[in-house]
Image (cartoon, rainbow, N blue to C red; front, side, top):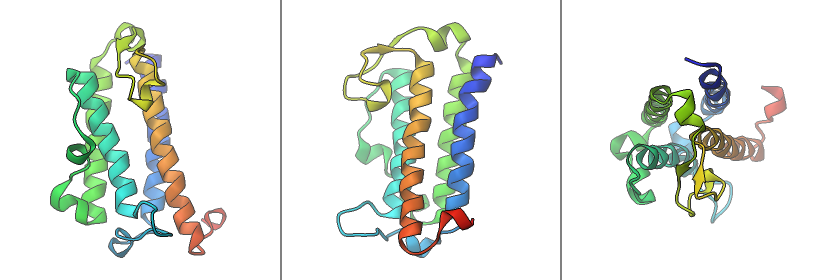
Length: 160
């Protein structure tokens, strides 16, 4: 792989390590919980991370729009942390495999993206490399929310 591939893989690896650290502090009992009414549950935060990645891959690979209801449905695996961890690692492996299948030229050649897709920075054509970077940013945002959930119940991340 190229230096670009290596750089693109570094950020998601860091995010995944942060998410693993957060998951170690939660249990299956936390999945249906949210800090306040109207906020996403822990399970919904994890589903948002994996589902967005799944949706992105469907678009990049086949220019197929798959609804959030479908991409965020993980069946029985969505009912436990072990299952969600499996889903998250599976989606990441699919993403990295697709990234590896693209040459550096393809990673840097603007590709069509729908206007509604936030990870494309609202650019109709954008380099897939930027989309992969934005996907990691999206995941980090939700990892930060999960850290805040823990902190709100007294689990101070500065003491981890």
